Image 1 (cartoon, rainbow over the protein chains, first blue to last red):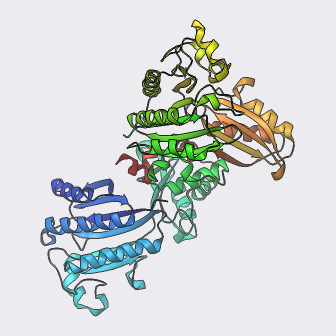
Image 2: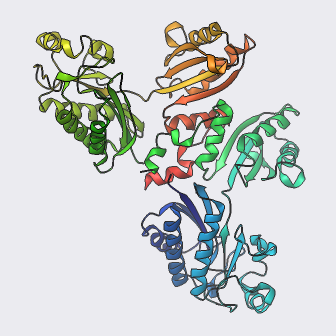
Image 3: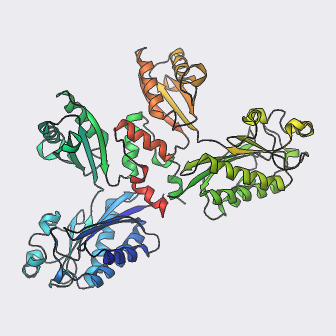
Length: 298
Length: 298
C-alpha cells in the first residue's frame, strides 16, 4: 500500500508570480513529488502550495522549497494583509493515505531540524507541538515578524529548533502536522440569513455541535440563498454525511431544503469512501475498488 | 488530462498458474501498463487479466500478451467448462477516463490487425463490430473452437482480420470495445425470494426497467437475506443511485428494507463522482477534487 503525505507550505510572497513559480519549480524538480495546486493572493502577499508524494519524497520537496524560498524572499521588505512571521510562514504536513499522524509529525520534526540548521528559528505546532501553548498557529504567530526580536529574547519562546536569534531575512518558521481539513458548504433555499446562522450553530463544535466542525452562516445574495459554510477538521471522527444529514434535518424544521453543496478545494479519497459506504449502505466499499486507484499502487 | 484505457483479455488457461504468471509478467514488463488484477478458474480453465494505462501503452501490453499467449497456449490440447474458441478467447478494451468509445474501438482494431498478421482469424465485437450479427460474444463464439474449421469455410463468417484459415494452435480471437460493467448487488432484509425476484424484474431492462440493467433475484441463505444481483452496463446513462433508489422504493411496498449493498470488482471513479453528486447534492463535484487523483496527472 502506497503512502501519501501532503505538504502545504504558505510562503510570504503573492505578488511577484515569477518568483512563486521559481519556488514551485524547485519543488517539482524533486523526484516523486507532485504539485497538486498552488495559488497566490496579492493583497495578502501570500501563496499556498500543495504537494504530495511518499513521506520521504515530500520531506525532500519541503527542503528544496526552503532553500529556494530563503534564497528569493527577504522578509525585511515584505508587507501584506495576512499575518506572518516568516518567509515560509507555516508548513503543514498532512497525512492523506496510509500515513499515521506520528509519521507525519516525524517528517515535520525532520523538516524543522533542517530549517533550524539553516539558522532559522523554528516552532512546532498542532500535532507536532512541544507544549500546549504552542499548538495553535495564531498563538504562535502573535506579534508577527516585527515582534520576533523581542519574542526570541524571551526564554518562554525559545524556538524548538534553530537559534534563538532574530534572522531578518527569513523570519521564523512554524511547522507541524495536522489532519486534512475539508471545506464544505451547504446552500439553502431561503434568503433568511438567521436560518443559516442557526444551522451553523447547531452543527459547529463551539456552540454544542459536532466536535470537528467549524461553521458560519453567510448570505449568498447573487443566488438568492444563504450558506452554511464549514471547515471539517477530522472527517474520520465527524464524517461529511453526518453533518449534512444534521443540516437537512435542521433545515426541515423551517420548511427549508438544501439546494446544493460544494467542496472548496480537495477531498481525500477516504472521505469519499465513507460517503459511498453511508449513502449506498455499501459497508465494505474500499477506495481500492476504484479502478484509477490501482494506478497509484504501481 | 491523463487518458486511461483498460484491457480485459480472457485467456484459455486456468490450471497451469505458472504459465498464467508468465503471461501476466509479459504484460507488466510493458512501460506505462499497470496490471490491476488477474484471476484463474481451474474448472473453467480460463483466466481474466485486467490492465490499465494510456491507450497506446495498453495496446502495447495487449500485443505483448498476444505474443506470449500464442507461444505458451496450444488450443489443440485445451479443455474446460467455459465456452471458448481461442487461446486469447476475447479481449475487451474499456474506456475508463478521458477516453472516447471511438478511441477504444480504434485501439481494438489496431490490436485485431496485429493479431491477424500473426495468422490468427479475428472477429470484432460490441462497439467494434463490423455488422449487427457480430455484436454479441455468445453469437460470435457459437460452435466454439471445435466448430472453427467449418465456420471459417463459410463466407458469412469471414474473419474481420487475419486469414479465413483454421489455426489449430491459436484458435480465433474476438476483440472489441465495451463500456465498463459494474457488478452491484443489493441485499434485502427478508428471506422471501419472490421479493428479490420482483424487484429484479422492476429494475432490469428486459422486463421494463432501466435500459442498462441486467438483474436476477437470489437467496442468500447464510445471511438470512435475499439478493438483487445486477450488472450495470452503462453507469453514465443508468447511474447507480437511480437503480438503488428504485430498489429502495420497490422494497418499501413490501415493508422490506435494503440491508447492504456491494460492488463485485472495480468501479470507475466517474461512477463514484456521480454518487457524491447525487447524495450530497454536490452538483459540481469533480473526481479531480479527490486529492489522490492529482497523482494520476503527474
